Image (cartoon, rainbow, N blue to C red; front, side):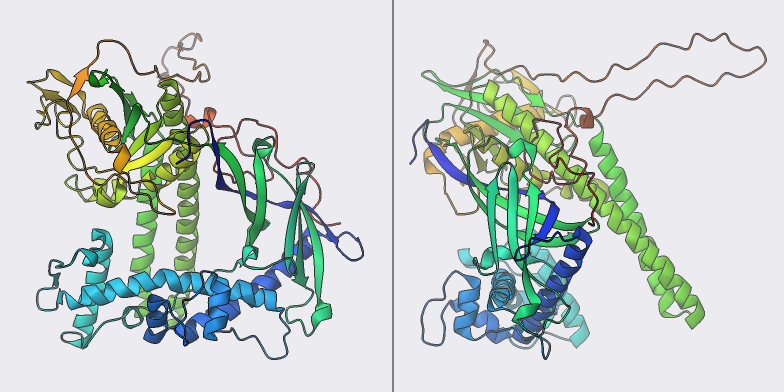
Length: 601
């Protein structure tokens, strides 16, 4: 266990774009449009080969081998995807006459193996659930073994698939049901994960606030030989908010194409302060609220026991949640209209069907644009929330932040619309953003059980009364109460402090406390929590117009300007679009100083 004051490595991601490209052999400049074309040829080769390999391997025997983790000689399969595929003899096929380097084959097999290994868990769960499915009632029986447990949302989706298959087949499914019986092979994304290759295909260096990527790209859609693969040296600026940070390694990026051209999805490793969960004395509990994204409260472990001032912090999104709800309703409306036109087009004459299909394409494009906008707003909202909670915890000198376990948190009882709205909120993004932001200042984030956090008193663990409705809580015995979200934050922080020495750590996941213990929390009259800072927003003019009223004319009612939104406190992204990092930026200087340069030379 690392002690206080030590540093540990952690990875983070960001995006950037190249502003200059040259031929590595001759040094001649290459237009960025030409680079986009050559990258598209590379991605087409990778996507076609990956899709063909997935379709060829989409059979139950593939998932049996991956579930066992053994090859033909009963040796354990290595963790590297391309090495495991080569040992199993799973090689992709390319068009006749096309020459593709072996390092590109590594990229293809690594991406395919990552997809198949992820679906192996789903195949095993579907097989177990199919044995507990009753086609007569359409229900799943209760699991008998602890290993048969799966998340409730996943079980509901599989149950619907099994019920649809039973109706289609006219009876109970025969034998074991596999993932290949319920769905077809997944589509492969057009991307190139260069991290699966070595220096023969790509290498990256960092110097003078620039990243230089040297990668082999084809010079034709179907390269016929080694000479039609040439090295290109791409130069991109390191985002300004990453300059000066203790980055110890820059990793090879993943290349994708979007509407702006070539995009690098990069990763780097930096040193951050080590969080010491075992010796935590002050904790902050974060409760997910249906009215706002979250609320927080602090609990301290003193010699006299656990104390709290019961004064919480409520995150204010400044109306962004209402905007997200409007976009969600708009996306659902577009989906319903497209589904209705699809049903009409199925029985329409050919000339009418063509018109309906054109309208459906427009609706799908609009729905995709709405989804992209929602994702962008959710991301900014999550990291703004993470920065606010991290500052609150740092001001309280907390060593740990406790969040509710999202796998056991399911919205229900608020109606179909509100349940759907809460289910599609940015909670999981907020957890990832909070863990990333808090790790930068040495604060650990753990997940604790969510059941009963807002229903029981932190002092006596008895059910709370609701004298003022849903959002208020009061304990007549302990005589404490207030906002139910703040009391829930106190309970979550208490569970983190009591179970800090029993946290389960799994790779790739937050430390988790499985059991909710109870200890009375004494109300402290002294102020132990920090006062949340209120960012200064733009001044809003609320005075009435001074122009004289015209007789005989009904004046236009004066509507004051709306309040400043959260976007005034989040610094804007650089104009070149290379600020894709999940960190809060500390400078408004553009990340790419030559963003106005022409794309072609």
